[in-house]
Length: 149
Length: 199
Image (cartoon, rainbow over all chains, first blue to last red; front, top):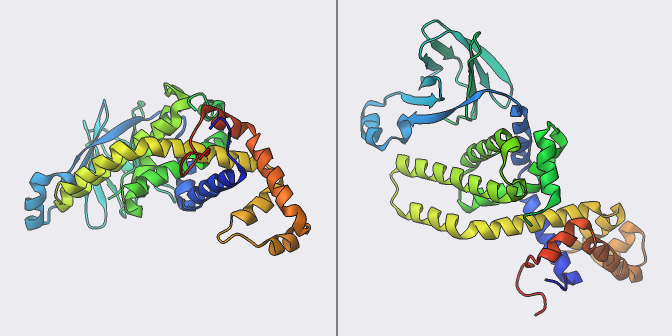
């Protein structure tokens, strides 16, 4: 390559580079840019540690009983348990504590209350993908990764 | 390529809350993330899932990336890992055989390194193109169309004599070749697509 590219090679390489860029849908690029909104947010990340749908052992049971999908997100200090109902998400923060639960979607953000027992409901079910962020008055701040149901 | 100063500077600026720098990182490397996702034959739904997590992880690690110059490699590895996660999840729920697993592993092992080189080369080429004067960009864009515009059309559109299209094309390409974005690439000796340029 020390000799560099001749004109045809350079033009060909440029064509390929432009095509690679054109192949990417604009929604994909926008989504990447929007992720920056999460820069400097000091919340602890809660990772998905359980998903009933991904659990092969339960697959048979689920098909028989059409059981409710359950997900668990775990951070170092607490976990958020979720059940996907017909029209709403029901959940509980463990250990139980009161606070607020913010639901982030591409369209914006809504807030639900979490009661003393850690229970909350998000209604209707937010459009995919969404994130949940739990905060308490004494400074707990935990956010899940993007969730796609 | 590991010492690409542009990438290091972009990461530093993005870590210091510069949205423009972040946008440029996404513009440069979205094609890399996209091509890895499509290489795994994911649905758009799954691609969205993967990419959300990849960019989110990067946002969270901007200040602590061990080697900012290796960002393309980091992105490729992270995207590959997220794709495998999605593929594994769908395999479990659909109870597909092991072929998909093997296919995914094959893709993961062989394609990514090549993918990173191509992505870096393409990003450098697009950056070099963006540095050209508007006139050069117009001319080269018309030549890059598929099929390319005829010299007659170019002459009429850009209002230049047919006889000077060839020389202008050569000057624009030479200018591109000498741009800082491309100089680093050529020195490092990244292969051009399709074989040995001296052949």
